[in-house]
Image (cartoon, rainbow, N blue to C red; front, side, top):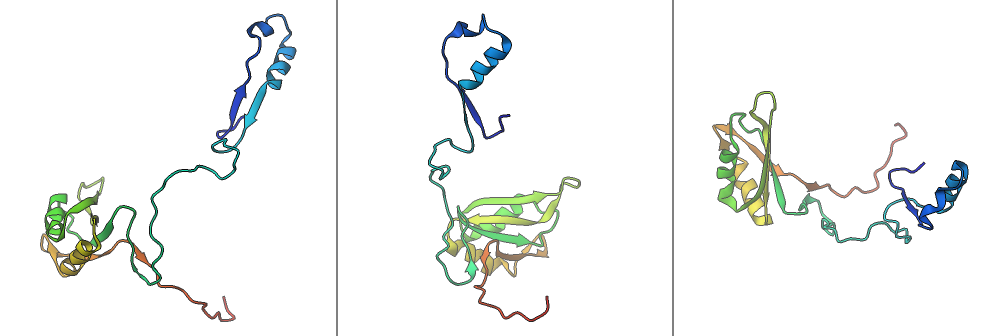
Length: 164
């Protein structure tokens, strides 16, 4: 039985071969000419798909903000539910060009869920937005602004107590 990742190939021989033979002979002949290849890529090298992929820089040894694949993302929470994307965009565009912005809406009410993700091209723009808007307001409600991705502090070998 062929699975999702399997490919079956049939080598063609004589087209009129099955006309004068019984069904079981035809089936046996058909099975002998089928080659089955399993897995991804069928390249035979066993190393999977070879392509060019974006990656995130993991060379920083200290904790702190991390760059996403495309830019520096700021997480904005405690946004007034009646705020619009334009209100958020207007406030945060003062600190640099916004590369991307995402604000989730509640399907039932149509209002914001209370948070948004704002992406900047450079670290400096994102840091200015965090520093300036950490005490800022949108529609009279104080917002909380911080990095969306933060590299955790390096964990050393912690001592374990005898209890678990």
